[in-house]
Length: 292
Ligand SMILES: Nc1ncnc2c1ncn2[C@@H]1O[C@H](COP(=O)(O)OP(=O)(O)O)[C@@H](O)[C@H]1O
Ligand SMILES: [Mg+2]
Image 1: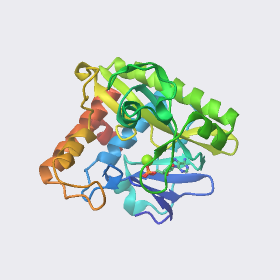
Image 2: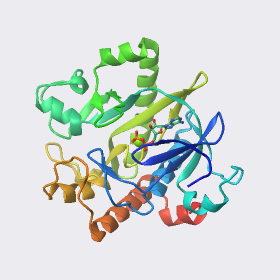
Image 3: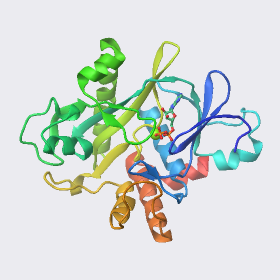
Image 4: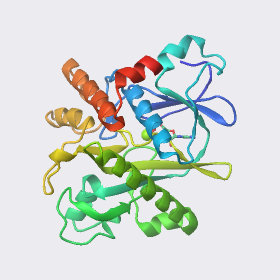
């Protein structure tokens, strides 16, 4: 790996220091399910996530952390350039705001579980009588805390306001919902529903930037529009496949996970690549040809 100072490892990313203001943000091929990192890599998954994020940074044109994908000026990377290409961004180093900015347009996942069980932090502004996977009257901002280990925890509006202050809360909600609406419109033109997604923001000096990955299959729930039926489970792209395989084992969702057979790895890989093509309207082969 690069001869730069290693700063942090996330579940999926490795982060290195370029200089005081910039980081090397590398998406590996690791995959996590139920917050556990699986034992197998999904080849090119990190390139898919990086390609989708680059696509949306460009499309959204909102202040964000991307500096460049050109690594040729970064000292000390010569031997690693091939491994890093397509999966690496130079980004502005930010002070991460410790709240995951989740926006939901549909009732699913942890929010549906709260709703079904009588309500929780994400459902405080919802009407009664909604079904699983129903479209919400309007998108809702449902922040979660970034748990250092384990599962993220949904928090209420007043808890979030206490954590961030009213001004920052309102700014993050406004920006998150605005980006969600634009991305959801974009996706719907491609026959895809953006059911929910998660953003992270951070400060570089006093600039509030969209950071991390953006609108990827890992940070978002995308549904094929023609398979959406309110009241029923909806299959999402990508991770659903590996989750279903895991669910069919007797795994208790704590580490270590069972080993994925080669056909499950291959099937997952092809779903990520399909997701790239479908979500960006481009071709992953072309992405690799120019960035791989
Ligand atoms: N511009 C940035 N500056 C500093 N940290 C960042 C920036 N963008 C993203 N991060 C952080 O980098 C990490 C990304 O690694 P990832 O593997 O996705 O982590 P996680 O397991 O928390 O999802 C996250 O902790 C995220 O908050
Ligand atoms: Mg992450």
